[in-house]
Length: 304
Image (tube, rainbow, N blue to C red; front, side, top):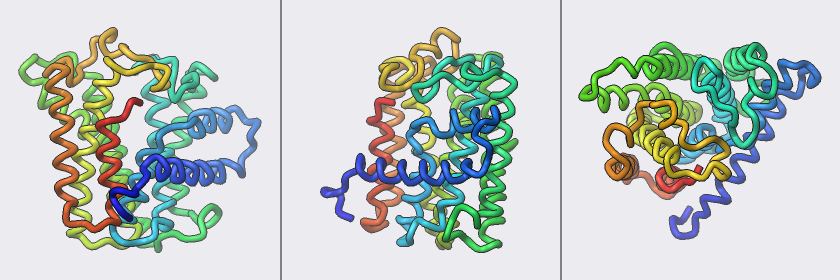
């Protein structure tokens, strides 16, 4: 895989399409006329970046392996990510009307249905990993799947994404000089943990060695934080029509963001440094890590 010849847009499109097919397969056995299933599909099948499952596949490839054994974890992580978006958009949280270019789940259905659709996606994600046989031809062995469940549930729960979310909700109580370090902690948990476990899960799924996993986890920690810094920047400078969600909401809601604390120019510089750190730690990897390098660059240059 040559750096010059590598076409990231084609790579992302192919992997997005593949994940879309498997997510459809996972929901297909259920009655599509049930409101719960409709709500789950409304949010899950909306055209998102699918960054987390793509990172999983890219990490498996960077280990010199076929990414197919990583697909159960890929789909489970995307289901968990979608659940988090549904709940994040609720009136009690960020109160957003638009997500992935369509009405948020509670706007399309109801708050009750949205809450339960999120709950269902979260719990069903672990069913997909523990019982992959109906959906996948190739999957990790029982011991590896148990390890994946442990790592992903840790990243999504009280030591990860959920903890980051509640810290975010409580951030208004902080003094100004505490905010930068606290904000990094929030997003290392709220956004970063699921990105990191996506990369880690891809490596675990294909039996990567511990030293390789350590490097990939550091790579993922750096791009995960950079992703949120860029998100904060886009909330100021982004085009809502391209992003598929409202811009300017952070300022309106007086949210604690990187530009609000260190300024817009410093935020851009910080994101750039994080991406450089990520690319540097995988410098010893061969061309199979080209997608990971390209995705890191994409994160800092994205417009949505």
